[in-house]
Image (cartoon, rainbow, N blue to C red):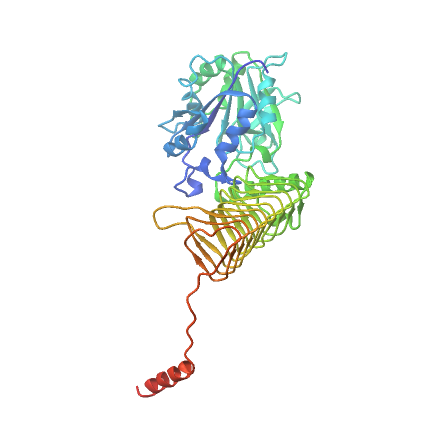
Length: 450
């Protein structure tokens, strides 16, 4: 479409059914605020201007979109959806194109649908308004779209104001509307509030456009795409639907999910071919898993990169900054944070490796930790290629273990170890024969004398 596209996102409602101090449109789907899902979809549709209309707790929304270039307009009095859309006029002053008005609590609105709705205004019949309709399984209290078979709208009516015959119509209004800006402001200014709720309704611009001799049309989409989120239950339902679709996509792209329903993806999870994901794996934002890797059961990954044919878990935690090279192994009850594990290196059991670099083919024994924090600052540990760190060792950063070096089990290493050296840092053993038996006799006698 050659005509410039702007979007007006209505997010001024209080969202009382969420029962939350967090603004409704900032509740996450797949680890990302629902509003940002919507903005991303609108951007891909070609939106060159984006305005979010806020009211209650609007400062939260303003902070959330600060890095996106989205403009903010305020609706200080909650007088209805038409009034809310009108608040974007100053932000879009001088813009001449198509405006899409939509709602911030519909994160699944697809790029293709937005484009299709905007393009409908460009058709030969040149309608004044295009409305996105849907046919839900339960029409409930949705506003109704009374339209001919070709999509020509005869009437739009809110459920509260609809007759019994109108309520029997199953084509419902999603609230997503396309109008040229040269028509939008004029129509919004003309909207009145003579209705059951005493509000200024956005759908009334359709009635006004028809009364002027213009034409309004509806196009349709599926119910799931325009599902609004007004409660925690609806949030969970949309999350479940998103996850189901993402799991199906992962498998279609060549990954094996052993128990698909137990795997949870983030909005930006990248999964390669021939990746195997065992049950109960959770991906937080920022994870990239290369071809042939295995993520074993009950692992949690966030902000991490997993190399080709690497092996993670079970019960592993990869935190932001964790990078596993090809064929690296991170085993059970291991936590990796801001650390690079080299090609073929192994951290198999019960270890914490943070702020570190582990060289190729190094082996980190069970219970090893990098002591990277002194209560004020973080420090780095470097473990060379082929080094072997024995079980239950503590590497007190900043410290370097040379390539090929061996650190004996139970060592507390506070200074650098040269390449190919053996380091043992242990207290000298002291044994006192019979001491334990004498101690027990003494304690029993003391207890009996009480």
